[in-house]
Image 1 (cartoon, rainbow, N blue to C red):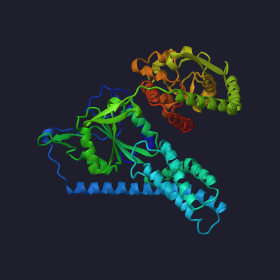
Image 2 (image 1 turned 180 degrees about the vertical axis):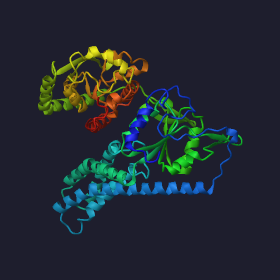
Image 3 (image 1 turned 45 degrees about the horizontal axis):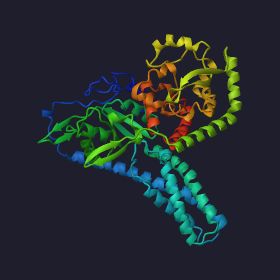
Image 4 (image 1 turned 135 degrees about the vertical axis):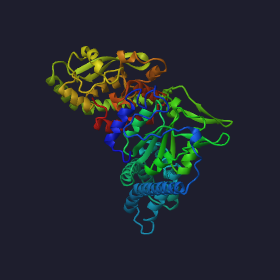
Length: 523
């Protein structure tokens, strides 16, 4: 599957979530090949027939080639990020100094000092890794670290510049803070975009099956900086003398990594022996590829887990989700400010949409429906009407054609009007929900507000998704709205509630705009 195209990726994702016969199904046997187009299958032969695989010269040469390629990419990435950051903070400082402190001797010194201090501080915060540490590395995820590094660098720069007798020090420090918080992330985004175009996306190889694999695949296929090159079952292993196990004795996995220029392996832990992860880690070090593990039983835990060691045993601590009073106040303040501003700014557009809806088909401009909110309390959700008046009466008839048995998911829904199709695709039908946010029934970001009928399907631990107020947007919106299967949507909501943070809400708001523009998952 060399150079998999983005269009074929859509097919890949569709096959991944198709059902029990795809690799997302629970009933698929562990040795079966995933139901993906063109997926390469590693044959698992009788362990007794597998020979010991010595380190052949061609293996050593292939390992050296992989190492050289990855190091070259890593150095290029480091240099580009350092140079971009230096320009982002050094150039504004140079312009300021030239205007406020025109000294031929000190003019070039100040910007260079500022850039050097910022660069050293960013390095201390781990913002210049040779290889991406996380599979989801992005500038958006780095902003908290960038903010802290900028604050520290500005303080250090102020101390140095005070020693040099720089005038207008307060204004200069303010400029540096603005450069670090606004200009630097913008330059980083542009730099990473250029690096992806020049070096290509990070090439990821999926290994193994598991319940979380389809969700991970769907998320990664939305990213421009990642290319999924293949999906393989766990390779064969061979037991040597004593209890020693050898991974990939026939060299098929090694050939895939070399031929497909793999940068990272994404390994599902389903059906693995206790030592297989350690074997993969040792193998990945030899072959100079990154290793990311998909823990089969931790897919509803998220980033809120804390990993620790107890006398050599790895333990994972999980805290019950709970928002402090301060956190709730901050979240509510952001909701009121955002919804109030949105209603004022977007009121002319909302009036135009209301008129278009009324002119297009009989019925009112607004659609009201009872939804289930925080702690199971119901409320009336308001949207622009995008369907014919008797749409609810037709729902049961159409369920037989639904792609998802849990809720209605069909192509070309006959209930949707002409204007309705447009406002759904552009998400304009959601705008009246800003009023729900303003009065406190909803939040800007949160779990999906389910109808009473759909909420009845959510049971057990899944009810934890009701721990926060439902949102206008959320993980389900960013990842594809109704193209996300019902069960996965419930899991995403549970993850959101369990790992809530204010910065997480801000990130989801920033990610919603590209998702809406791309009409991701719109029906």
